[in-house]
Amino acid sequence: MSPEKIITISQKSPHYFEMGGKSWIPVGCNICFDRLNGSDVSIRENFDRWIRRFAENGGNCIRLWAGHPSLEIMPSQPGVFDDEKTKTMIGIVKLCEELGVKIKITLESFRMCLSSEMAKTAKNPAGCNFNYISTFNRPLYAPFASNMREFFQSTECRDIYLRKAMRFKELGFGDSPAVFCWELWNEINATAPMDVYAPWSDSMLAELKTMFPKQLVVQNLGSFSDIAAYQIYDQMATIADNDFMQIHRYLDAGASLDVCRGPMDVLVAAATREMLDRRSDCPAIVAETGAVQANHAGPFPYYPFDKEGTLLHDALFAAFFTGSAGCGQFWHWDHQYIDGNNLWWQFSRFSKAIDGLDPIAEDFRPFYTESRHLRMYGLRGKTISAIWGRDKASTWRNDFVEGLKPEVLDKERVPFNNCDLDCYLPWEDKSLVVPSPVLPPFKRSIVVKVPSEAVDGIVRPH
Image 1 (cartoon, one colour):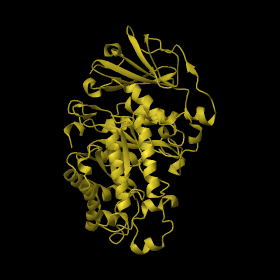
Image 2: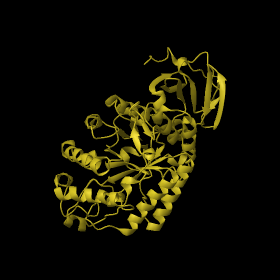
Image 3: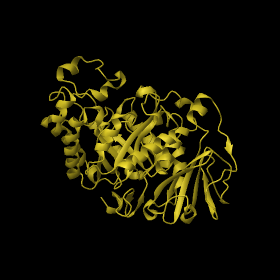
Image 4: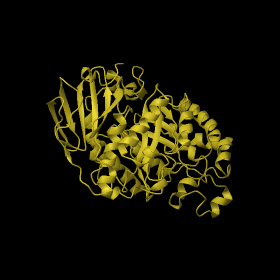
């Protein structure tokens, strides 16, 4: 792999990634699997359509679940590989190489390992959603473990897990410019108590770092939505071999934390701050976000009403302008939301908004201010500073539940004086320059760039 294609963490500004010595901002989305699990041909066609539409609109980073049935290369017997699924994985990697899209590969995702006898008769194991039973029932490991505690303590299960990872290395994925990161597990805290999974996690991070020395290696946890999340995210922040911080958080009516039931921009911004508060020496990514029925019972019931992609828009912008290394990475990429509502264009609006920003050169530091009508999420750089202003009145409750149309905001002011305001209006896809401090008319949100001296007195110097 050419050094110019390798994603690393910047030594100059460790909150951000770089590629070939230049800032790399992940414009990402969870395009993880084909939940309809049709024929191998249809799965390939779906991935081809999703990834091409995504890349056409400025997307440059996706995630694949290598443990999902639609992509599982070693489905049932250790060392026995499925040729069709292998062909699918190879095809996705080659397509991403062609399009310049980077991939994070999540090696496993199940939450219950059944014994051989249980696997024969189980219809709906306790604690599993019937629709996702194939994700949790893992006959590959069943001869060696009947529950997750046994799985994490089993030498045989470790060897099988690493054998699958080694197969990807043999296929050349370790040298592919498309694959930038390996992820151990999806939401590993959902499998077992922390004292059970944490030693396994530490061991596997070290193993994968040795196996894939040119790429990053990470772990991730479930949605930061209740009191238990504080402890498990505290623990994640202490793992030196975890290359960057990730967080999952959803708009969820059943969540314990109030922030998870409020506006999408607020919950995503707060999630970013949770990571930055815990580690200051690495990038932070909102790796999964979206909206769900109470307690993740299914997709958000108001998705069909979000034809303009307001929720997606807020997640994309709020994370980056709060100090994340990239946008918030949305879930429900397929017929359930993004593809179903044809919202790929929202990624192009985010890409245009950040065009010309160089996080490493600027060494951005986040700040926040607000007015009566706007929440303003800001990044203060060495020469250029930027804010994303969000209309407080346009919320998912007002837009989808009450059916209120967002108003055009006019004559709003920002606390920057004696400078020009370089403005981009994402919803209008319009750029213009106006004198400070009055903003041009806009709907829902606006991005404003100013010389950094204009924010003196607004934020503490650094």
